Picture 1: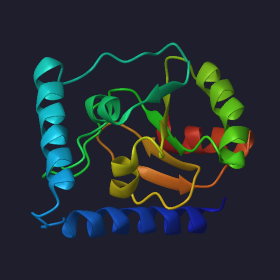
Picture 2: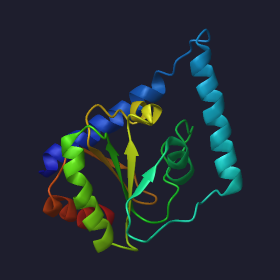
Picture 3: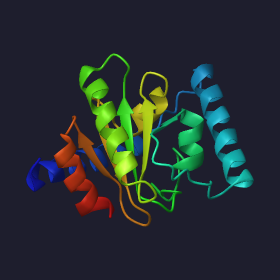
Length: 176
């Protein structure tokens, strides 16, 4: 993927985040949405009280995260200060679906790169079918979508399944 295309994806991703955060639902009749927001708020408060900076698994194994684990390890969903990566190690988050063939093909590539960069990066996976609020919050419209995280830097997003060589190059240029 060339730099111009990557920048387009990044711009689109950041625009989506701004749009989503600017268009918060004010529908008070929908009890399900209110209940989800209260649960999410409680999870976020509990996660920061228990362990503001969670221990990181640097084993090189791909880690599958639930929505709650994502909030605890990566970032809160509705943070007034914007996106703030909680980790101290660069990471890749693969937003995937079990039914997605490119996602299935990308799995072994991420496992290989996780082992190759053991201790230097962490590879996470989030199933968008099980974490729909995250998918909405991050503007995931196509899977796989890869989120690249580096401490104290803005996240970068890539849509699609890059080859191992392309992903290796992105890791070297963006994360390390």
